[in-house]
Image (tube, rainbow over all chains, first blue to last red):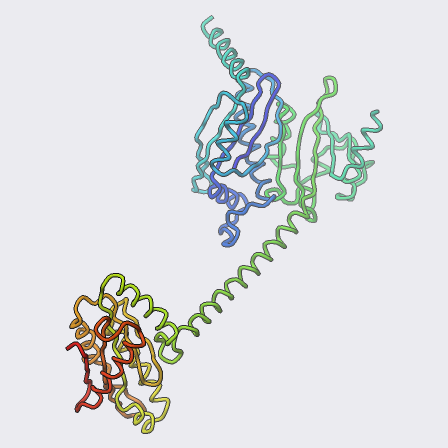
Amino acid sequence: MVSSLSFGEKLTGKANLIFPAEKMRTFINLCLNKEEADRYCNMNFTDVDFDIIKEIGNIVLNCIIGEVGDYLNINLNYALPEVKVFNRINFSKDIENNGYMHVLILYITFVIDDTEIQGAIVVDLTLNSFIGLMEKIDTIEAELYE
Amino acid sequence: MNNILYDILNDVNEGIVIFNEERKISLWNNYMEEITGISKEKVINSNIYTVLPNLNVNYFIKAADNVLKNGCKMFFSAAMHKEMINNKEYLNLKISRFENGNTKFLLLEFIDVTNQFVQISTLKNHVLELYEINRELKQKEKMIKKLAYYDNLTGAANRTLFYEIAEKFLHNSKRNNNLLGLMFIDVDKFKSINDTYGHEAGDRVLAQVANILKEATRRNDVVARHGGDEFLILLPDIKNYKNYEVVLSRIVNNKNKIICYDGNEINISFSIGVSFYPYDGNSIDQLITAADKGMYIAKNRDGEDNCFCSCS
């Protein structure tokens, strides 16, 4: 399951919070304070579940992209996250097809009430944005040595 | 143009609230009036947290401050934030910022998702009902299968199941050139047991016989009730025809061949005939006929637990 937040203006790209479906189910149940999963529709996600993921993706991805924007002093235009469910093959096709040439991958573990939930954050950047980002980093680096 | 936009915001089918950096409300649309019961005249220029006290919580204040500062958008789901406005509707909330000159405003959009919650709850109940119906059907199917293939009194396979399995075993034996053994077992003096102690005692004897035969056989052997007091045992994959004697010995030496009924001890003994593919026939019916004949030869001998096998 993927929660994606697009951002634009000086830096254009998309940040994705990715979880395997079963981990997402655990995450949703923890957020709803629901101890046991439904035995008959465990891996069927409803719009209400998607809204929860949208909220989680919103918080996490805003933090990460916001921090990058702050640190590099770049203004960003944020969208609200979209939530999608992919099977493995479709997801890799989505990554290949969307034209983003550079991808940053972060593996993350959330710990909620002693339960560990592993996922990943993938930040897709267009080539121009990546070059822009590198230039900005170079400028900051140069300023450090002045 | 401003008036048109204002009218549109007033009419949209979601709750719209706009407030400025000082948290003073500048727009409160019709939908908000409807769900809160508070008129716009009462709230304009009032503090948002005074008007909607449920939003006066740390995480919301921080989120609003963050949106105001960074221009990011925030989303609050109805499932995780119940009663943001009241306890009647389920509302998702979107917060975003817009600017007019040097002044920043925050836009709150309350989107009613109550119908989703109701539909999901209804669907879950349907799924639960279907799950229960499916479970009951599976149980009934299991029961019907049991009734169709197993003898109700003894729990042994009935003739239908016996023939289905026997044909497969015979086919395998023909293909692999293996022996297939068949034992025909008759309970000695069963009529006398029924006449002396009654049918209930007879039924208990038959159930006990089935247990004795099951205990004596290997996992792949098949014990079936042929009818009345007659039982059949299929012995697939026998390496040597003499090996049936192991099963025979376990039947004859079983310690539970005496049952107590109504203060009486009823002794169980058998007459057994044995036949083998390929020596006694090429079909199941031929093997049953041969074993049946062997059983009658055994029955006519003196003593108890006699057995006849044409190959011995």
